[in-house]
Amino acid sequence: MNGSIRYYLSMVLELADVNRRVDTNRFGPFLFQMGFDTAEIHLIFQRVLDAQERFKKLPLSNVAIKLEKEVIAGSIYGTNTIEGGTLTEEETERILSLPPEAISKEEEVRAVNIKRAYDLALTAAQNKGWRLSVDFIREIHSAITNGLSHPHNQPGLFRNNQKDTVTHVGDISHGGRYKPPQLKADIELLTNALVDWHNEMEDKKVPALFRAPLVHLYYELIHPFWDGNGRVGRVLEATILKREDFQYAPFAMAGYYLRHIDGYFTLFNTCRKNSGTHKPFPNTPFIKFHLEGLFEVINALDDRVNGLVRLFLFEVKIKQSFDEKKINARQYTIVTQISASGTPPLMSEVEHAPWYKSLYLKLTDKSRRRDLKKLLDMKLLVLDAKKGRLWPGFVNERYLDVFERNVRQKQK
Image (cartoon, one colour):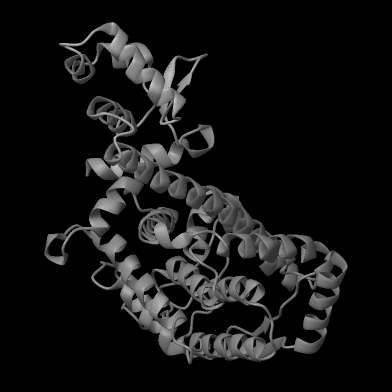
């Protein structure tokens, strides 16, 4: 299998041959190139494809709404934090649920704007006739920066630096500072060339797993707007992947970039310098980084879906057991209270809790022990003998985050 994948990628590169040099007015020559080594990336490419096929076979319908809300909130938190945002993930999720008239602070507007850009991206990805265009890039930028204060930025309008205002990107700690094109005519020329180059790659069947990070990389090197370029670049990448039927992972990549933020920023400079010194396959580091991120993200989503499905089936089982009189009202109360606790409580804490004591005010210890034993025998509760904690039946260490997150959402 790996040999066939490697051969396939080699054929893609050979047949595509869509490297493109653009001579600008002031910035000088700019080279768009695929520039990755199949020998280095074919294994991780195959792993991503395998992970995606496995993920698509999961029973997503039962948990799709909850999963989508989580992914979008987490992604907005991630992409906003990369650009200096200070909202927590919980605050971001809360703000996204507010009506428009309740949004006033600029930090809140930033989060809502990103959600609006995601909605545009999702609509585009579901449109069979959609193609990447300069108008789409402008539209995403306008959505992201609308209503935000900036001394120069105008939503949807390219930069046009004057002599006394120079744009630099990056810093010394992440591989150096880079001066992108400053003249609007150069920026327009290069952005149009980027779009044409991507669409030519698409026509020649270059997989989205390569097109998406390459557009992300070269878009950031052009850096066409005064503000919001990082957020726009990540949305463009996500749109291209989403269009190729990658579910949830395209937007969840923002979290991966945040977790690896130093490497993420540094790799833009690494690829730029590789190209400038004519190293072979200059873009391999970013392509590989991107594929490794997708593999990590898809596997995490796989775990998350499995956890949510377990939770869904567990809640159905509790209700069904009660309706069919397999458990009594006291037992039903115990399981639902433990499930709502957020973390597995100590058995000693449960025994001294007022709600638990009230269940057995007029009953004997024998009834209490019998109730608990039946719940343990039915696997509706699990007692950790070493730590003395009670877990809901669907939870183990692997799915603890599902347990905790579900409780937080119920408390809102």
